[in-house]
Length: 233
Image (cartoon, one colour):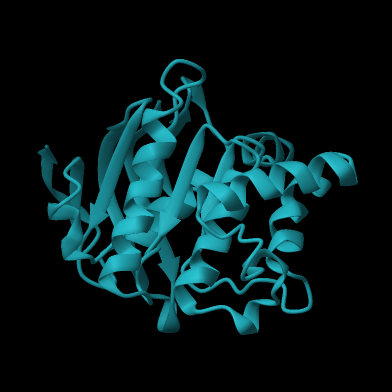
């Protein structure tokens, strides 16, 4: 479970003034759940996600991961936590000179998985996201030869391939058509539902997509840094 208790985040800007992307936010993301963060641009969605991943630490309040107080100032604690978190970034490009399957292998190799094992695991993950295709060879293509939707699915495969218990996605459908967006949302729901009997998964998605009405789940709305609405669909 992920819990934020009266969390605020401030940034110092010009003339010694401060901006508050998050103000006194308290919420919980339960194990085995898919959760949406919605709100206009600048509402604080990305800042909240970065508090969970350890990219930011709160100015005030506390963040708990699986019942343990998380101190993002402790780099060793952040490194240990990151092993259990997969992140789908909004604008993080794939490695341009590596093929799709080689990109997906990178998180595994970074954790010390052998080259042969990493190749097999990356193949299996690309099959799950619909990109291991012997006929068209999508898995062997460099990113520039893939569509934006295919590139996004490779990014999702990179985030999922280490089988993290927490999956964070920042606007994962921002640059794809509706059909591809539906496939992406379904991937996240399958990731949670098909792992309920092993280690429960928690997925948190920051999104503007209206398609969440087709994939109903717990929704949190942020506005100007404040949590304004919680909808437990």
